[in-house]
Image 1 (tube, rainbow, N blue to C red):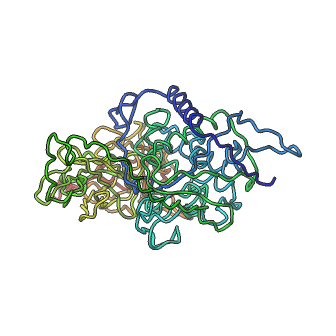
Image 2: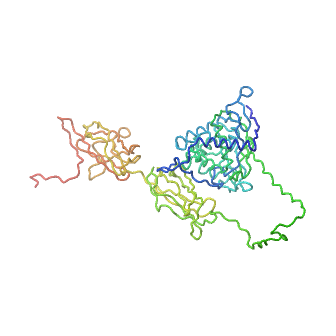
Image 3: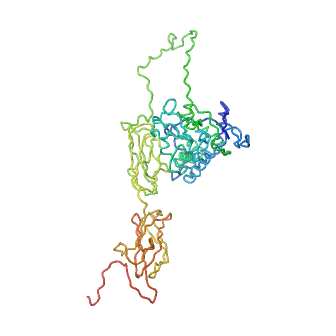
Length: 596
């Protein structure tokens, strides 16, 4: 089906009324504000995190977007010539098949990884429509990569945001300034930490709709936002592009898609027609998506040059007003000899960062650090600076993250100049982790903190079961041994340990006879590596006995120093005899009467 072009222009009161009605209706269906529970998650009653107006603090750099609104009729597809679904130009309801699939797969992934976010795929569709017209009408290949890059204009401060190059042109083909990239229009500096691999091809590509949709979902769900709450939803959308008009437009499409939509073939969607003006709302950037010309430069249209104001026509002389020369009244004060000054922002006065958090940070793998990361912004004289945004970044190859699974978080300094990062959650990789604090919008030396992740450990072990562990020579023990590990009275899951058949209580070396585990080729092994399960239980493999009889010792040890020693008895059936071996504690032999 050929792409249909057109535009249903609605200006003035009609546009404003539609957007306002949509926002009001959707907001009315949401829960009230949210609060924070004991785990730091947001629930009903509290405001969402404060938003920044910095261009590099948004996904798009406050880039320009499309203002085309949904059609006024039902989103149910109409039938065009030949029985194909019809469109209504830039405001069509249909979504290209691959693009729609990417949105739905992203929603499913977020439902697993961040179920409390309640991300609807329709929100991704609304943002994708506003940002790039659903990847220029679904012009993508079979893997979901756009046919040619979708690039916004250069963010060089000329009517838009001023963001110097951060990726050496790798994503946006521009080594001087950044540009918004791909179907969800991420700027490279944001993609660097927000990028995701949505199609499991091993790459994180902002030009791929699967990668971009999943990244957008994670971006919207950071800070543990619950998007079923109106306040959180508004904060999330504004964090993508900080403009009230942008928020209203996205909400209009969100409401429309929630009423129903339909799939259309890739490449047949209509192209958006009406980009926002530079500086619309609080955003200052530009984003125009593409023109469907393959390579695409975003379909940019140059901004009109400002028309110089006409000089005023000379009027008839009138009577001077009081205060004017010859007008009587009070004499105006003489002009100041000091040139006018532009007040600086609080950020401009920041000279350095100081540590304001815990002196040391240590946590066991999988646990949340009890100490908090915090930094204080100060002037050169050491005076605290409030209302400054500080960015905290987990540096390097580590799986330690902030609450919510993100490696970047931004916080606003309070009246004491202190910015506190979200809780830090230790990953499974042990060792030191660097967390770097920087000031958003100002270049000052970074503040690096070190957090240490230790291995999971247990401080107590107890056998599960009480049956005597006995066996006949050459046989196998009937019961498979299980040991429960705890740490400070709580279940110790995923703790590494070993089970060893030892020589004696005083000699922990491996015994060379008696009970054994079976290794490769059923060869006897007497040391076995273990790990506790989700319930803290270490399940030992089945034990076998050789021909030696007697009492033998099995020692189980875990990370953290927990130790448990169990007795194993191997004895011949009644009425038979066999050589006896023992692994009792080493004690001096009792002399016989003749020896004494």
